[in-house]
Image 1 (cartoon, rainbow, N blue to C red):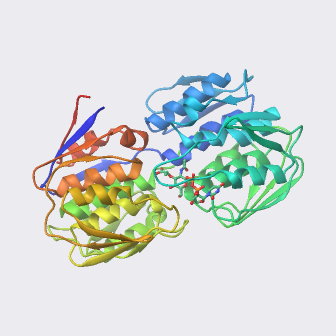
Image 2: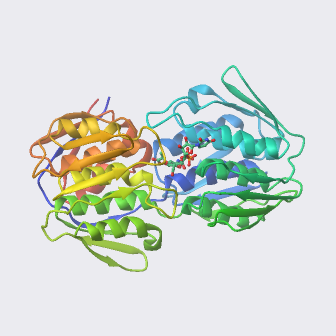
Image 3: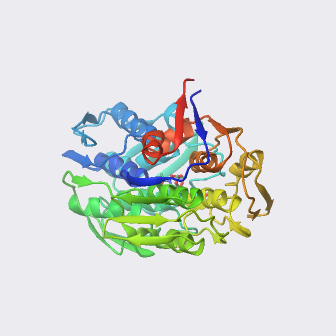
Length: 419
Ligand code: EPZ
């Protein structure tokens, strides 16, 4: 398996261009299933998960071509199958996002249950409950979700817990349902808003996106889209935390600073100077060691769970003790064991990691377990003495475009080792 080697100790400096958001690109690519008209999406990041999504859609009969740079053209003129097979779904849980569009467009869908994941059970019961409330007949058989609906009906759907892809599945299904759907306790993540904005350009009638109540008035058909994905706030946050950890100065270009409030507030608390422009953010640590910060993850606009591992790594070398509380997933601390291998002093107590900052970490071989945990190990490697080798970097490639090139441009000594 490919590995990444990092030689730590050098402050990062320079500017990095942030790519399109993975978690917006995936649902928007799936939304092409909702129409028989051609669609075009710009600023699509070159990621394993995007490739998997295109493979899945291609298998269904969607004609896909890659435009110049990061543009993708898709045309779901007619669909050959309503099947999302296990061998693809098990590599990317977000494949569940074909369920709502297939039901709305096709009246039927057979989607493999995603199965387990390193960070938690991650059930999809709320997706199914919401679609059933809209009249879908759903049963699970042989590891597959079998769903049918002559035509979905608008309904009031109350989500027990905030679910990003659950909200997105129901939102996409509701655009072609008969009547009005109201989604209560809806996710407010910027990626949900980006999907809604794209659906509106297709002719969908959606209001309330970005709040906890989304209203959708169903229509009979949708046009294609010609849309651009919003920048990835988690990629941006990851590079800005790297700047703070290494005592460097990094400007993240092509970002929407307003979507990073919770993260920037914590970086400021850690002692970084933050400069915000309309589409960029600069973090300057000026050689200082960060101060420890307390974080508690929560649905947007709270502190993002996808930035928890990165701040755990920052606390590992910060001055003082930081408490990191994970409230969204039940097992998102796999990186703690690996950070301890690098010399971090941290203990898990329930859903809190107590992190006592140490002066320095020491490079060692470590294992990536999930997407954000692997990013945090790269960050730790940037400050550890000597070499850190991160194994199973396929986790990183799922969510970070050209990570070693981007860190390399900032002065990091980082390279990919052959498998
Ligand atoms: C999305 O996952 C993101 N993935 C995740 O990003 C992100 O960590 C997560 O939202 C939270 O922000 C994509 O958008 C593709 P959830 P999702 O449904 O939708 C429980 C990354 O690193 N739940 O919001 O799967 C669930 O178990 C990835 O880019 C149910 O109980 O997350 C969890 O505890 C990792 N039943 C909580 O809700 C359901 O039917 C939030 O999960 C659905 C969810």
